[in-house]
Image 1 (cartoon, rainbow, N blue to C red):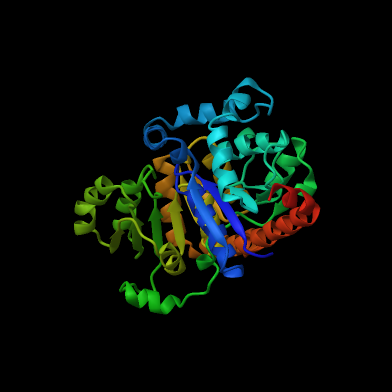
Image 2 (image 1 turned 45 degrees about the vertical axis):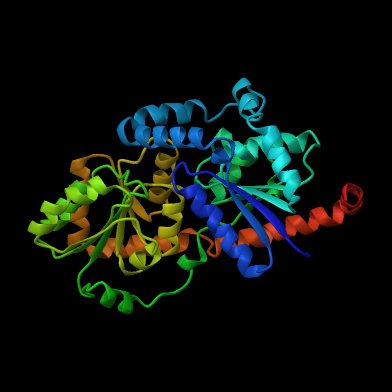
Length: 388
């Protein structure tokens, strides 16, 4: 394959797009250490100010007015590729992106964010871009923003997404089911006893992990901590507050008065270790968080999923028996107390989680990407010689 050059486009609206990009990059470097990989935040590339505004607006929207986001998501979920809105999105920054790509001359472009995939796919359809495009769908549901006829290869998480793309006229030969790529760190077996000892955790008491994502957008996290802190059944709690300093500080009183131990963390880079020692995770339903938990065979309790893609991801988890969805405080408290009394139900969800995904998603995705590159090289040798 020679000196492989790759561009990966992601976006920082939620950490999932970036984590999927990093997982693919890690897998590529494992197979091809000499690869030249450029990872680009696609919106910040166009404007750092615009990126900051959109990112802040998105976080505030899903925190404070999630129903509004849900309405937007579902109203735009089935717009056709030739609609006015999609045609507008497909020309955003096209000249800047094209010039940048021409300067780097990559062998493949990988997109974990849908909008940039649309821009590049349109250039591909018009014959202006000669580089194959891979789109990695980072949710367990299909939205129109992911669907672009000019994409050469789709990497998807499950059969539902595969069928959803086929139903919208995407050639099934261009779709590969690998699971959503997660960092290979989540695939590696870890020594649970050593991690328990590292955090002074007891091996004979259940461990519930609470995680609200990088920006702490899990509604009700404080309520979850209070229920577990006061539980009559002994339980240990690990809460990852991310960058939400307000949430972290608001737990001072609960931690001080808790009957059961609560361990707080800010932003962490060892989620795979915390998941290894946990029996259940209470979390938001981002596609990457769901995938990482399922890869670790960890059951998920999803509280008030954000309408839109997270709602769809939550339904997927519940449908396969790997978790439960709780829509209000009454259901939350009832579910937590019930599972503490009947831990065998946690074991059943754990077994379902273990069967949910094919495994080694990033590695498999990388194999398909390399196959696409080889196919492109063999089919376009003369064209590339002419360009050089």
